[in-house]
Image (cartoon, rainbow, N blue to C red; front, side):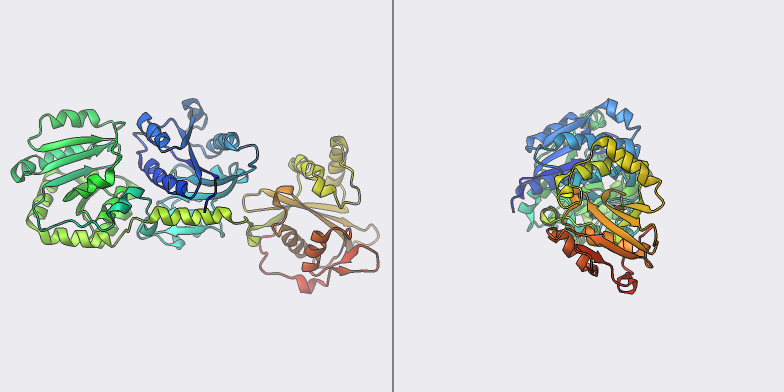
Length: 529
């Protein structure tokens, strides 16, 4: 299905943050492009090599300057959210009032960050693998092998849809060409890759190369080291390669990583994103846990005997690496077990699954979850919002007063309403406190058991069933009050809404009366405040 719509990514990459977020977002963007999405990213000054790679795929880059990074106070949520919101408004085309899809992949961003973003975006996907902070997103992807919904039940809205497990691993589409790849473990090990992430901030490549020095020379093993040219360890590795005994090569900014991996008999690497790349190919692997967020992957790989996990990086000695590799050289049966077990963890189709679901979600009409709606009393801050709604022609069309009020008269009316004991005005809002509509109740001076009710849904949210939700929520507030509504006979939409909640005609023309409260008591709307 062709969408021709924007998909905006929010991620960062650096020597400190690593490049894992970048690469998995790049893979998803390539897949979304096949569904017709125009992809772009918002990031703080990506390393030049990564920026060039992103743009080489035909994707736009909207960089945030270092000054904006400083203003964001190192990812203070609301500041970064406001800066990102400003960029989204710039990206929006003149005929697009809302960004169809935003993908967020960032460990430093959580709940408050989403508040200025949500009104600008139809659907938000959060990519995470920590399950340690809240997200106001519409769907969440976590490719951890052991993840389940209960890990996020208290961290996401009730309507959030989940893509969990290695079936959603975001691998580059080039891995599809190697789905039937098999490693011949009966042959001696001759090709070994060192893959500790694009940045390898702990220089585990150097430590491992030292450990392999004598082994590689003795067994005629060729060692391939994969890094980004932005890695701070590149210079040290280049110097080390001049002194090592074994055949070795350094590969920088590799674009055909699947083909290079497929040539390997053994990979020694971290437990990050490349874990699932190796699993998809079934490459026997020795893993070192390089970061806290890799702990779960390491435990699962060891438990399922899909890799040999040596432990945490700062506890690893060269001898431990040497002994492990020697054992694998002598035990092709262990390598065969690693190959077979790892192939069962990941089939490499995660991006295709995720992009298909996202394309379907974006094409749907967005409906707020009824049980997340609530009514709150108006405050001074709502004056301008109500005026914007009142000026919309669709709001005035069937009003008893069809004239658009002046700003001065609206302000006077609003202030008088705030202090009128016979009038109550409520804002219908969602879980992020975004204003969706207004409900007004005017009591009769002589009979406080009767009140007139009127509703107005914001122009951007009409046609979503919010009017019915507003009436049900209002009824729970006024169980002992008889509610009356004036509805112009031409206003078929309002007639249907009121009728659906039990309102019936009464003696006065164009007036409708609520049924006895017992018929409208609803347990499903339990978020009234």
